[in-house]
Image (cartoon, rainbow, N blue to C red; front, side, top):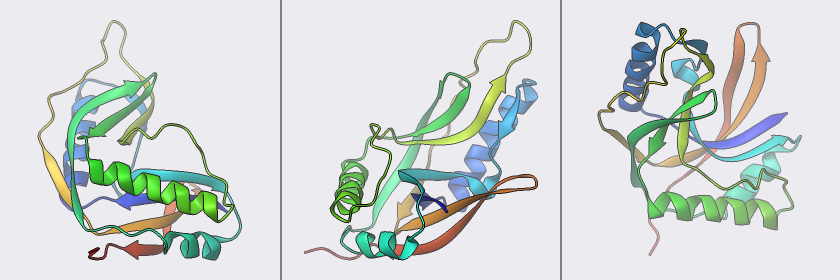
Length: 173
């Protein structure tokens, strides 16, 4: 079972990302556009792991108050295009807590440096002579009130992401 921990996006964020994708499509950019229902912010990628209950149990040690995140830019890593999340100490702290909880429970995860981004296009190819577009981005934000354990499976028409469970924010004194 292929697992990851993520923040699922609200409608405002998904709509803004859809607008960005539409601007790429109008420029005849081809590639694998992330379906709206699959847009998310990955906090930790676990990969193949067959004990989601153990992951959820580890996540119970994570304690955070609700906080806001907002989109503030677009960019790319090679042919992978993304929308970036504005700097957020609360988000950084949450990721550290998640990683510590996973490590303490002996659950393997990808230890690459966390870069807060939402992938909206993979394997982008541009029309001949076109430059990578980085359209101006309107702001969109959301209140983070839970983190979700997600499972990804390959379906007939691409990846299917399913929420297995979640940990809610709680008031921390």
